[in-house]
Image (cartoon, rainbow, N blue to C red):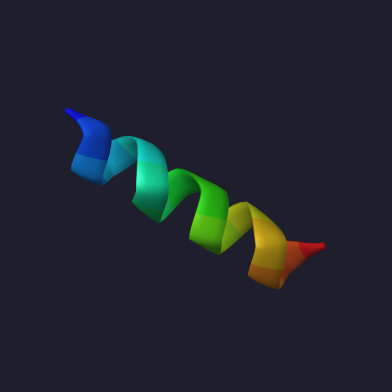
Amino acid sequence: MFLLYEYDIFWAFLNN
């Protein structure tokens, strides 16, 4: 589950 969390953070960082 934490992997999805890290992926979400990474993707959000790129989108910002």
